Image 1: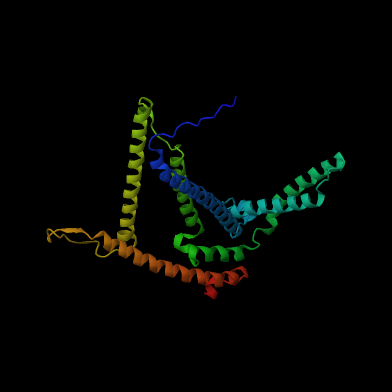
Image 2: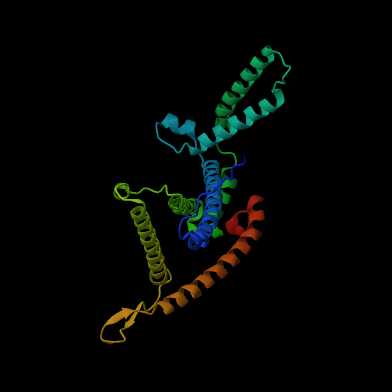
Length: 288
């Protein structure tokens, strides 16, 4: 005899919350993809900054060691890592053993790769100054004369991306219920009480986020975009000063943001023209 499977009945009011649930799921997917993209961009940016900084640093290690003075060894470390990685990879590609190779050949392969690593590490002493002028020109252009200068250069942009990852990560943790919270009260409540407290907390967090966004916009208008004047005579008492109307602040922010985006577009256009010259070795300050 066939037994009909019965699915549990939907909770009361589930139909009313279904659109909100779908919106939350879609927003979470956007947050997850954005977080992944920002993480990749931050990792690439940090790697680029470390490499350019190391390759543009002149390190006269031997002379400074003989004098007993300290020196920046960042260039030495970067060159040692690059040299070891390049030589070891080359030896691996050339001598990589096949499945039917004898065990003796595998031992020789391991010895050769290890020797390549050691030689690559110590060979950095031979090219301490190689390319320092070229890479100094690139990193100085990026930090002072490109669009990245608006965010504080490579390092400043990496800081902004780190903050962005933290904020997006907090949003993702909250949506999954994994954010840090104190649940002592909820443990002692029934199902209805827990739902009420959870809804109250979410509404409070949403209200706090809206208030923070409004305060941030106000900060941008007054401090960032130098709204002048930031206050005006009060309507009920002209002898006192009150904040200008929110509409004036919004219009000021929109106008200044539009101007900044225009300048950013012109700077990016100039960067595309300058980049081939800089990569070709032309001094960016001479070209500009």
